[in-house]
Image 1 (tube, rainbow, N blue to C red):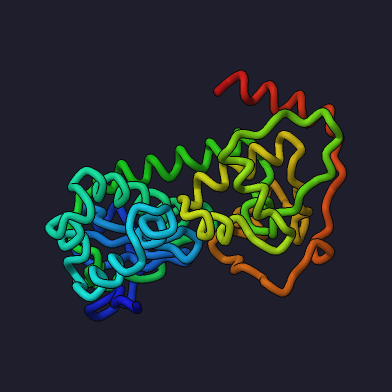
Image 2: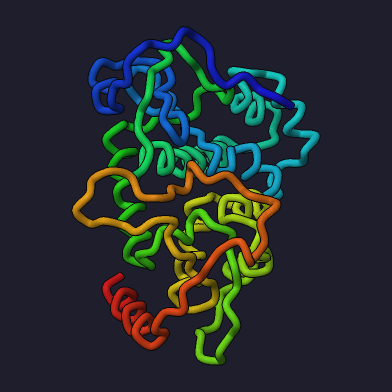
Length: 275
């Protein structure tokens, strides 16, 4: 069921999240890769086309049936409250899932490669109030997540391209059950965002699994679409939130590197020793 995401008039400027928090603004900060909702200067929700929404996490993840969600979805502005009052979720369950979805989407909306492009004053998210989070905490967590991904495997191309399995050489370490579920969907067509949605998992957690799998040699790392220039400022050549799934693409659509595996394993071991 389609739900209203925005109300109110859009302004003609693009303020920062910190500035909106300082003025205790209420509305939607529209970014290149998502939207961050504020109420009285605090972040109350976030969404991104890259990150599965809370409805996906609850239904695909198995906590709610599709029928239960459809019944709640008709109460725009009070969906969360209805789920609790009707006994479908506890307050704690709703809060945990909401915070997970909020930080997941905020990472893509506010992270590197995405920037604010407008503010829709007075806009409110259909979920309704759950638990607000300070803007400083959201920005700090966004930075922390970016550093974590870079430490696991410093090739962000794996975040956006279809996930392609490498031929096992017998030396790659065993995978965890969570990673095995990701590999089962790595068909050279599905992107990380699509895999996260089909599994009903946060997109950032899926990126962690994929970068670890790439570092271990289980999945391939695609070449960048253009050379990177360390001395040039600006967003990278490809960014996760701007690369929609390409269902008509197969493994042959991406050219992959054949890196020095021993060197990469030593790099991986050194990085893991510091975590």
